Amino acid sequence: MSIIMSNVTKSFGNPPVSVLKGVSAEIREGEMVSITGRSGSGKSTLLYIISSLDRPTAGDVRVNNISLFSLSSRELHEFRNQKMGFVFQFHHLLPELSALENILMPSLKMKLAQDRRSFAQDLLREFGIADKANNLPSQLSGGEQQRVAIARALVMRPAFLLLMNPPEIWTQ
Ligand SMILES: Nc1ncnc2c1ncn2[C@@H]1O[C@H](COP(=O)(O)OP(=O)(O)OP(=O)(O)O)[C@@H](O)[C@H]1O
Ligand SMILES: [Mg+2]
Image (tube, rainbow, N blue to C red; front, side, top):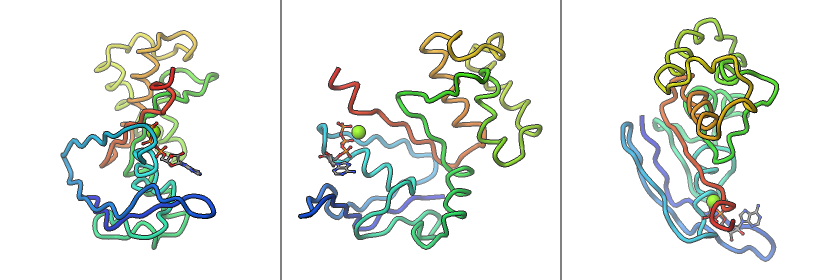
């Protein structure tokens, strides 16, 4: 598994303002890569493109040698669900579901929940919150909520895990 970015270019607006100007890079399975840069430099934009949530203006992203932008929207949805795990700074847990149910959400969509239940419980144990499986997010601490969000991102055993900070934490 690898992600290869070739000449990824992104501009916004009219007249176009370019944010990414020909980014090329390769990320291989097992590598840990961090993207740093000043606020507004294009980190989130690049992550949205890598994860196929947004399209580049020019250039290509290939995963396992398949161009993401040649896939249909159904194939892209499946790719994101099975290959990519996402953790945002704001965890977006569903408030009416328990910790365990939140973790199982990605597998419910694929009708795999029975399969994944014991793995989800392993993750809860590994993260030290096995006794909180039935708590609602509002009954968890901030760090516990964040660990539930990470467990949810791992439950499909994705090939890639994307961890994103929003600009908010820098401007607070
Ligand atoms: N949908 C959009 N329309 C117009 N401009 C946008 C859009 N999304 C992002 N931008 C602009 O693109 C630039 C890069 O934004 P991006 O969110 O990628 O920055 P970032 O590196 O993640 O910054 P931060 O560290 O603050 O999160 C910014 O100048 C932003 O204003
Ligand atoms: Mg950002």
